[in-house]
Image 1 (tube, helix red, strand yellow):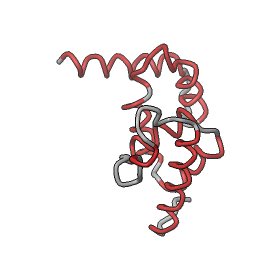
Image 2 (tube, rainbow, N blue to C red):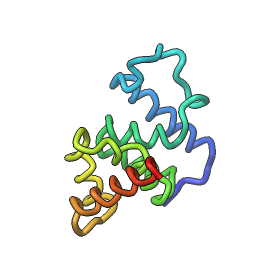
Image 3 (cartoon, rainbow, N blue to C red):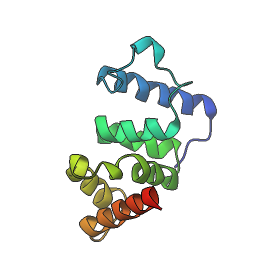
Image 4 (cartoon, helix red, strand yellow):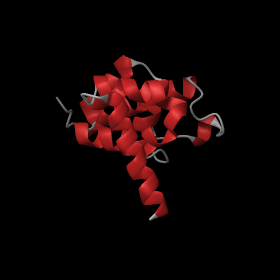
Length: 118
C-alpha cells in the first residue's frame, strides 16, 4: 500500500538517502551537498535499487507507484547493460514478473539504443 502522508514519505526518503550516503553512493560529492532537494526521485529509486538491500527496496514500493519504480529502473539501470546484468535480471524476474528476464532486458536495451540514435 502506498503511503500518502507527505511527512512519512519524506522521512522514508531521508532514511534511504542517509543509507545511500553510508554506502558511498554519492562518492563524487561532498556528503553535505547531497540532500532531498537535489536528488531527483528517479535517482533515489535507481540508487536504492543499485546499492541497498531488499528491505530498503521494499520501502520504495511504499512511497512510489509500481509504474514509477519500473520506469526509473528501465531508464537508469537497464541501459547499463552487462555491468548490472545480474542485478537487472533479478529485478526483472522478482519485482517486474518478467517471464523471460533475458529477452525482456534485451528488448528494453534495444529500445534505449534505438532512441539514442533516432
